Image 1 (cartoon, each protein chain N blue to C red):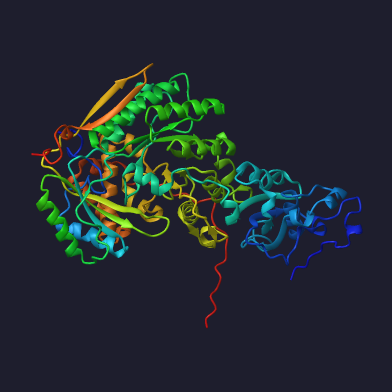
Image 2 (image 1 turned 45 degrees about the vertical axis):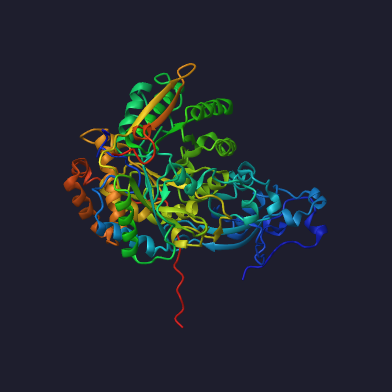
Length: 145
Length: 492
């Protein structure tokens, strides 16, 4: 079990708040749509902080402007992967940005075992650090119960 | 309408002796600046008896080709091209006869592109602020703003990382980043210092930072600091699952030392290093190059700037320093808080933040921005707000500074009554609650205290922070404020 505040990984915009309700998620989606950002749903069972490419649950919803429709996609993803991490990302295509402008977690495994820190001692007192999710000791798809 | 007084008869013009700068060709009221000209805006307080146009011409002369007397060797050059040209002089509102201040003037001076070496802040500043600030004909002189032509900007690499790539590398989007400076800034051993870093990062901050004067002192050798800080960073990353960082200050006596420290930071896997403004423009550009080559975020502390940016009549506006630093290529720069303990008028801070973050900054006299500035796709610089800010001001900070900023709560984290982790958590919860409220469309600036109280109901650390600092404000008049008269829009 993780021992930090909330016993959870704290990636994303809202990990320090109580889990967002569907209503609160909808409000955030509306904000993204208001800014003309495309919403995407992604999932993973490898929460390494540098695991950039979570699996896409379909394509970014460039043409879907209905927050209820997007929430449906999120819930569909939750139903398919109830024990994965799922995040909602909003992409901005305007010049000078062309990058995600929002990213927040909307689903987590029931238990988050956290990360192992491996220290490789090198010459002098130099140290090489590696962080490994305990969960990834098991193959993909079998990691969280 | 002012007229050119330039002597056009070459024989007369180049007779040995001393003639007014105005007659030498440094005052050309009909001149229309070219797209490729660099334009400087100076605030001039002329010596008694010196007329404003002559003072402006003198500044143009001394910051370009002139010396105090006529020299025939001018005639071996395309001297008319190389002469900077003062082309407009406006009285500063609220100064001069009938006011309690002596007369000041805004002088617009245009410089040809070929006066400057490509990609060199040292060369640019050696001209524009080189000799002229000690010049006797002006009592005081301030460089207020500068329009940099796109052609010149394109000779600079700019920030090695920039806001967009920094966020992608850190995997942190849609909210300000949170930092803190380790305190006390001097005296901690490496081991104790790293403790502060670990606690703050584990509690919820993204970054911790060395202070400007933490280098390699008897109480803590730089290698010790780097080793313990990186232990703290990696431990915190493993306990939270987030990318974390500590700005390792590599400032040192020589470039050789600076490079050595930067290389060690890289070897240890740090995502970010830090330098101080006092290392100088050339050293900053060198480190920018190094950072670009090594995928390192480059944080700049503006140590020393207050000696020349704060007083309104003499020096260089911080807005100009911000422009130069975006060109020189830093990723972070301290740029004011509005509500904290250090100087900062809200309008002026807005002008500085826009200068750092816009792709195109429009003229905005109220913000002290005199020129449209196209940034020619130079990366955006992340401003850093640091000094006397706390969780209870989160709504104001978000309102004034926006979301692309690092909010640094040093005392506001480490001084928390329940400890450093609790302090960090209070700040992170306050921030996330405020971002959530803003995105939901709530009137967060007015409802700010209520939003914080709501979150404090389930977050004890936030409640303790609010109780401790709720009445702390730094309400002093700013010294650096804009001088402008709003232009009346004619009713049609």
